[in-house]
Image (tube, rainbow, N blue to C red; front, side, top):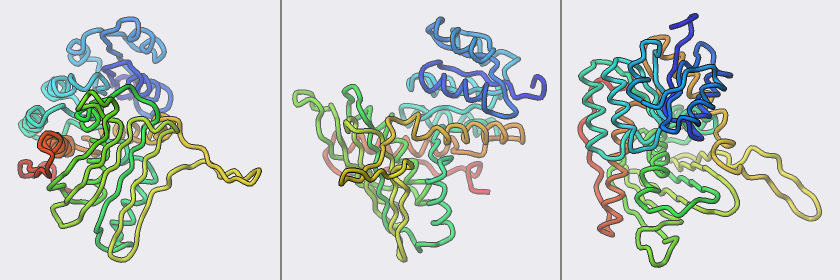
Length: 337
């Protein structure tokens, strides 16, 4: 550490990487940005200069820099596993944006590397854990306010997007909802069934809308709804039905306007606005946890099991049938404390 500040290296200076870097530099206590890496040297230099950091174009060199204490990975998905492995090999804590990898096999490699290290080093960027509305529902369930959870319903509505494949929607977007379902229901997903609507009629794997039906290992059921181009804004909603009641996150935090015989409410334009505070909370708690010993947020196990479910979803796309989601037994390192 330098000046008693955790020196963080940020890999990837795109939208989410730049957001994280600036949050660390300006709004996170106990940390500073030591370096920013991007293959686009100009982009790396712009973000680095804005954060008072050094610019890199090589991730390996940044990870190896002795002045860097911890890493935040916000590079394209295909690089996440290898870069996380490099951080673990260097013995440096890492917060990797979702997904942790793009395949179960690579997720298993990360898991095995961390087990070999004998301690938690990796955290995965499932930032809804740090969103207050989601945390409130989690607390309601933990207290037993609605009794045993019977069903999970998640809505993930994106505004305007370029055409996406159904596989891309699952691995890059729906994986957030997969983790939310596992986390809030406190149960693993055991079976999935995927149906979707094409965005391009002549492209069989294109997707603009999808429904994923879930079965949980404890007998509960669920549904995930995903839209790739709603045309009106961004919404994330979770609703859980229990034996004694129902819990639902709020859709919007904006006020209701009543005027001219109408009532209206603003919708978040996109994810940076909807989850602005959650991203701040995520990094602050990660920094505090590292300064205190090791990460405490969503783990490599969560990253791995989310990939197990995502790959089952992709198998369902291919087969047109429900598919089982079966992972390895959870290692003791990831048991609740």
